Length: 318
Ligand SMILES: Cc1cc2nc3c(=O)[nH]c(=O)nc-3n(C[C@H](O)[C@H](O)[C@H](O)COP(=O)(O)OP(=O)(O)OC[C@H]3O[C@@H](n4cnc5c(N)ncnc54)[C@H](O)[C@@H]3O)c2cc1C
Image (cartoon, rainbow, N blue to C red; front, side, top):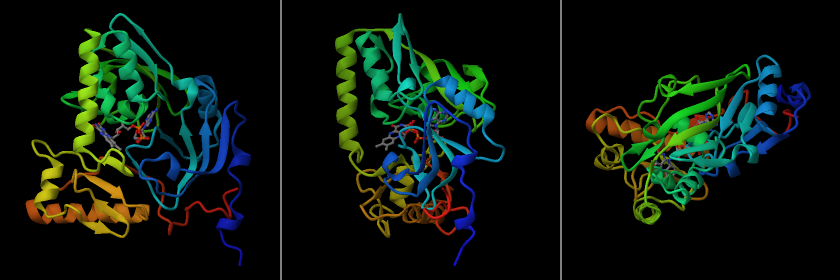
């Protein structure tokens, strides 16, 4: 029997021509650390900033867009992501240094920026070594570790607004707070200028090594995870609240609360996004019952459930 999904018109046919790449029905599971979730209706890898800007200027009304980085802080729901998912490619992975400043594209891995800073003997960016995302994701999340966050090393960012116009943002425009920025969710960061201080290359190198070792010891860094699931409530540690509520090792389907770091959820190999989301909600309920604290998701959940009428399936999206 023909369903509504089967007669949905092709999104690809309605999108403007680009120099980059459109990939319909792209598997987002392999682009996210959790390794779960449905496809992107269309995945767009822009050739460069001009290509992305032209796309944003001319995309048809009503087509939702979602930007992802290295997928280390997202949970892609099982019904996939309707509309266009944007992922920055090679053109956004540049990095240059001058004096104490580092200019980079928003698609570059945080760790590569830390290494470029080290090579230029710029200290203060070592913390980026431990954050497995891109600079775009780090700007959006005000990512941080070991007492430093992006806002401490921030000079400026360049973004494209929802109409494709270039915006240059100073610190006050970023409205940084704990693991968030106030910048419109639809804006795409395309680059940043960060600052450190002139330092000693040997000292920077050993700090980077120290951070790597500490990470290995304290976090399930090789696992299918999404990093810290919940934001730390003011003055408290989410992992301790979760532990106190007896959630260490708690499971739901193929999802489990890490025993190494209780604020990390794990896909043990067979989890669906629904398992992970249900487990997270179960943890939230137990913590609320136990301590009265309402945890908030730090992980960004994107897309729709498999049961949602907007779910992306192979049948009708093309
Ligand atoms: C093992 C592990 C350890 C982690 N440790 C830390 C840690 O110590 N500190 C910490 O802060 N985080 C940590 N994280 C979480 C995660 O790495 C960070 O939040 C990171 O900044 C996300 O970057 P990403 O490129 O992977 O973004 P994604 O996960 O792909 O996306 C995260 C959010 O950023 C947005 N986004 C991505 N790129 C852009 C862009 N170019 N423009 C606008 N918005 C964008 C997305 O829309 C989404 O809302 C950890 C994660 C894992 C898996």
